[in-house]
Image (tube, rainbow, N blue to C red):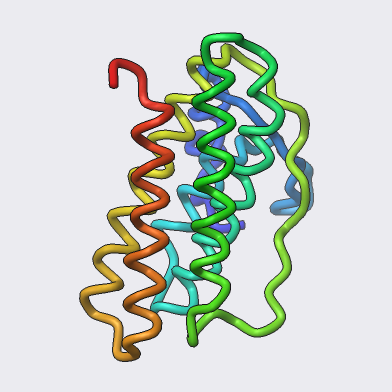
Length: 170
């Protein structure tokens, strides 16, 4: 875990958008981590196309789990979460066939049940998907392998769909 201070980690946890949590052992003690913030941190720290593809895979897996858990919490958000889940599956599949995708990649696990307001959850996921799209589009433009570029571009389109479906006011 590479958070530089406990205050940095505690900040997002006080936010009402805290949706899924995981226990992480750092500096000899267990702390609670917002998985969306953790995924964003991994995304921003991803180095090179293989690192970005791994981070993208984790984010799409997280969106799949969060959307499945959130869809039944609000009748008006059910379609958005259901379609976002489908887009996350498609984005994950696009990444899976990228030539630079690490061979034995396995997702980090299933997130805990969703907590918090369903609309805040949707906004947090939309923001994460938007950040993922930006990173994937940038990588697509700089990818040395055409297959990686195509996979990043396709996955970015699915991330955009997730963001559009879940962002409020759209």
